[in-house]
Image 1 (cartoon, rainbow, N blue to C red):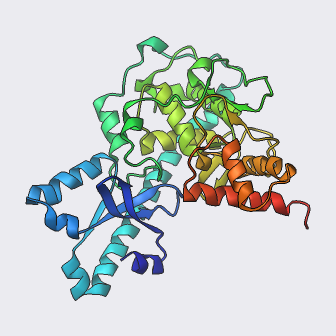
Image 2 (cartoon, one colour):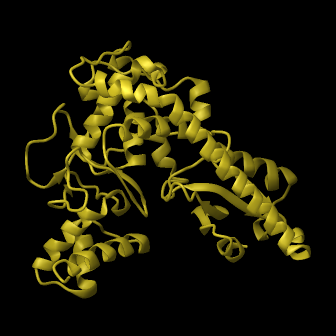
Image 3 (cartoon, rainbow, N blue to C red):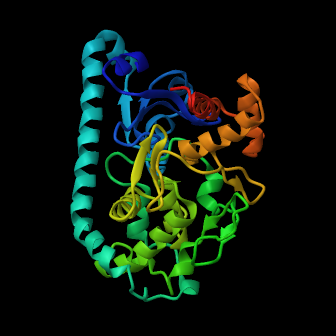
Length: 359
């Protein structure tokens, strides 16, 4: 099935998830690398070992949909008896999901365009305000939470954050916070996580999608990109969502944040996602690698490639070569374990750094 779908242009990853709870095939959203368009479930060994029909179908699918997945099911009997017909059905379903996703994003962009343009003028020289004090922030209301956690249609989720229960229950404290409203002035090469709430008087989760809330929301987005940029789009959306008391970042929240960010900052698409760069920054070269201020390393796929190239230059200048250079890069980045995808990304940065000046 995976090979057949790949032949039709879909990027497929098998066995997505952790432990024994896995989706058979994850289909990557071609419009959003690093996120999944849908999951494909096959009635294999796990299906036949299940004790009841409820276990087989309803319960598992409810759990997956609750996690934001759009599920496409294929039966082995259909596959063996009518291979081409079954493949056509799955292909058509995936195409329909993709079109629905594009239509929703286009509608959301149209709805927010005017607000984004207003924010360009309002955010400059305007005192940001909101209706609720920061200490009164509460989790989102049931209707917003349900829409964001289980949107109808594609249910995009970051590829490396599918079943991480700890991420859903606790805010991340991986990086040192920057409590100042201004970008950090020290140049010790450390990465500091921005605090979006430091640049507004208050936040108001209930007004998140309102036009009147665009100015403070834009100010928070500007601050995160200025402090952390280049920052990946879903990381930016997560920062803003967490500042509003939400532990999950749904597609509507992400689209709102990305639309406003695109109105003011350059965006560069990479294979792991889109990165927003600070205004005026050279998007082809980053001066130095920013090591994490705390004990937790920065995920390699959340670091823009030009910044990884800057790390590779340091290792190159130390005279380290070959696989030892990749190991040195991982060590300097604070990584104790190196996944295959991270190794490939570091190797690509090393190749780019090694080829500089060879033209």
